[in-house]
Amino acid sequence: MNSFKDLEVWKRGIDLVEDVYSLTAKFPANEQFGLVSQMRRAVVSIPSNIAEGQGRRNVKEFVQFLYIAKGSLAEIETQLIICERLGLISDLTELTDRMKVLRMMLIGLINKLSNSPKPQNPKTPQPYNPTTG
Image 1 (cartoon, rainbow, N blue to C red):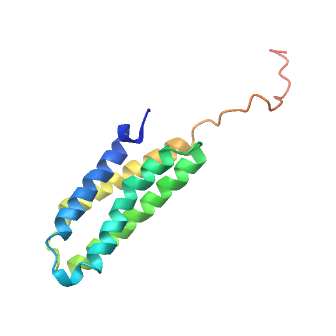
Image 2 (image 1 turned 90 degrees about the horizontal axis):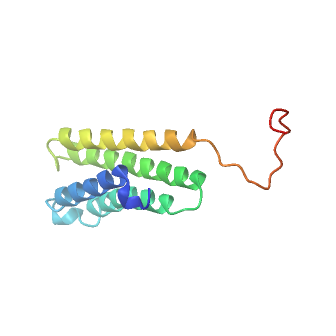
């Protein structure tokens, strides 16, 4: 992987940003500094944290940023439910399905990175192995 832009999970996060911006553009003007602002910050945080984490120097930091992205996804999902209850949105089915896929992708990447073998430091003494000397 050369760049965060190569990650499918990042691409899906960008798609979600576009969806939320389009959706919130239709909200009443009195929500511009309330839900609209909060939702846009939360959704932008998802691909931003994926990108920042991938740019870090170790897997542990990347995983931490993926957890932050997952938290932002839960935040936007909550805000969309609030919008539905307030009558600002009528049907969340398609958007909810896309968020489920994104959540599963984040969880999958977190699990994959968390379970990957840790590189050994060549300066760290290794235990004696009688078969290799």
